[in-house]
Image 1: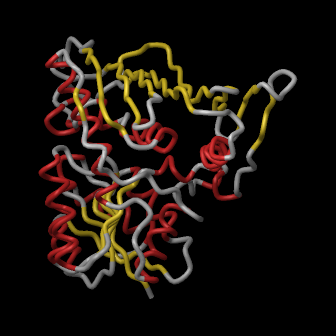
Image 2: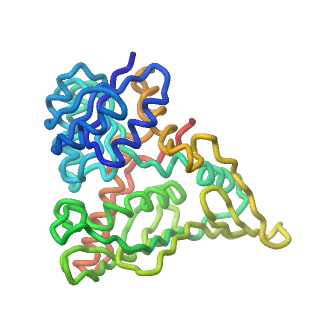
Length: 342
């Protein structure tokens, strides 16, 4: 039996618990949350014991933990897990600084334990199909790719951790770390970053809730990010343009595209697996299964700490570019994103 614990008993943690409870041979043995009522409620629903301290859960004979706590807690809890000899699946963002990321990586290397970061967008079938089409030359040479993600986040209070950039990392980490990851999957290694941050909230004026950025890829193509948690009209779109065609993702599982070889717009529908359908409430089952299998098979996780660290480096470079009003170069000696096989 593979015994797991959940650190952070909010919606995200319970979502992972629901998925883990549907994996054969896996048992949820406990939840840790600073709020005992939350830990108790999650334990009542999924089994296991409640704890208020993550180190107590780490000492409860667990093989791995899923860290779904607030962003500023990720590094400490991940490192503590390594010291306890426990594998870690840590939700995004990996850490809030590169020093935190490096410490997380080194702790698990020293312990010989697995560390995976939850970049769940890599597990969507439509993105995988789009990348296969790009690799097959359907769109020709990549020229540009983009992600636009606009919405509005109403914080519970001005002091809430999500709108404190020192605790959340701001929109560039809290939301857009997923979109940075998507553009890396499309374009590959990033050699430079330029960006500009926006601050729209009068209640929390230091919260960077809006930005635009350009990522330059090693082969000369570029990626564009447009993001806001201060937009009153929600809108999102991801896509790419090549020398022979263009495509964008529509909804959960459609690709719409046009190339020099097609007669008008074409649509590909990528079938959703049963557990991917909204009513199943098992959206992260593939991701969680992938990490469980990595631990059991003693193989490298799909999304390693070194891989996810690049996303943090890019997010911080966007902030630096905005503050310095200049392009920020990055070391191109970085791992390429790996797509999952599940």
